[in-house]
Length: 492
Image (cartoon, rainbow, N blue to C red):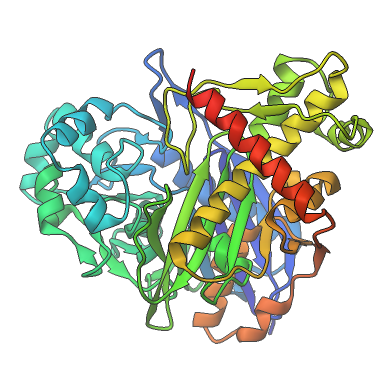
């Protein structure tokens, strides 16, 4: 009988279900979007009940599309959008309010007050993360301060809180399991990276009762069983849970210290495995956990960029210079080789490794002959420059060599960009033949835990390799030009 591995990738825009063979091959995919709930204050929310309903629905869509017997599903893994926070009643299983999405900054004033009270350094030392409304601690604290009855119900042990993985595990198991994995826990700003447990002092600072928190479980651990609301004749185990960026790191096979991946999306997540001991960075990148697999914890350095693929959208939607992203490669190659135009895309400030919210975007170094081709090339180049900044910050922080960069995401199909990225970093850049790296990572974790896969599964991906071609002096001149452009942008 065939043993299929089911993976659900619950992301910001929608929910994907992925089906894998017993050899680890991706066989089929189905998708369902969900609403983006916003208001004039800039708040961003999702309906947790809609997400759960879509999870059930997209799995059924997948099985029907693949034409398999649902009885042949053997195990399930989950990857999820990180930091998005949910609070729900244990008895009714109903959320007290909509999920607060990672993008939502409604807790900014709350964080500013804690920073003023002197808690910023303590939070960073315990969690590896800067005090920010981006993380669940502040979002959950906001709920207890502003949703009527929530704080009192929490004190009485009536509420459960968690990230999207916890919510889905709770619902899929009928409320039998309230769990999260180490990767998601490390992103809450409530989890101590040294003790590997919820931190009582942090819980007190943010006003969150310990009784609300999920059990922290190995990323390849036992998360209960689900029959998908009776749709399956027999329940299947849930054995792999990872935050999406961590899932992509695993899917890329970055299992050893010094291995690093970059996801090119609207923004970018760059993550480096640094092994079984944490390293705190003073270079503008943060420390988190990669996962706990096989009973062992691995730590990571991570940097996030706001504008990578979004720069291409800006060229298309705001400037009208292109009609589709696919045009950018030919235009960049047609640009004048001697032009040194730099775009610094600080449209909403600069993220890692600069963390300058006051910086604003600039286009510098233009000459009279600078035109459409040169501006398009500068837009592509800035993606590679920003990722190079973070990789170099990680190299300095970890004190270990980086042999190659593994990449994923839509912009990696642009051969010009990938070659330029390799040239700037002076290391190979490797592009896999699959795009669903987050879901692949969750599937691999579940399949390994269930005994369906072995370590050879990590060698399944075929990769296109770009190797450095640029002369050393040219590389140095370009990087110095970029740093000059960033300096001018920040000095405005």
